[in-house]
Image 1: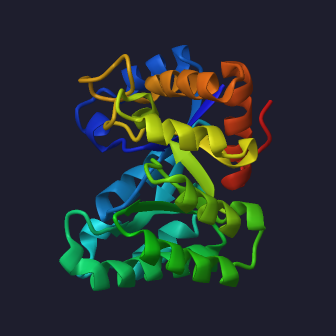
Image 2: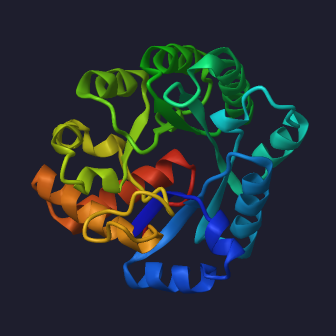
Length: 262
């Protein structure tokens, strides 16, 4: 079975397509999904879906970089983070591609989310773009202060950086997740990195509704498509889809503190 470790359910819930989406995911053997937060509305939806679909959908809550500098309710976030339905904190992180002028505010927000992850001892789901040095510096401090299981620090989602950056993340103890970008025609450098990641640190995701993999380019991405990303990763790494599915699912179960895979 597959575990799609990064799904934004907002659009699917809003347009009434969630039930059909989950049916198609099941046909593709995508049996577990992480509903990702990042805003008050997305956090609320994430927790609600985890309650509605126990054992199938799991929750994550956080404040993402787009909210940097805005007034936010961190007491509410702490309450949501402590709930049993919530298995991770995020997504959160740094993105200097669009708003480099807000670097200071982004770092302050990221720091607060990392603090909450440390308080509740739940892994963090990290976004980074054009912010490698600051991301690594903040994650190094986070990992030094982590008191829990060192294999449950968190994951850099939708990885698009180079091998040296991946090596530093791995040395800190983080997992690395690949999306449909690894199937894109112009992604040879990323595919080289994907071959390098140790099996016990590898995750897969769709980042739905974004970044549909080949052969679904141009369509709205959905969890069923994680099977296509897994197929490409298995080819790159010289293994079977079945073994990659088992490894990445077990990695996700361990990272998020869930039961062992059957």
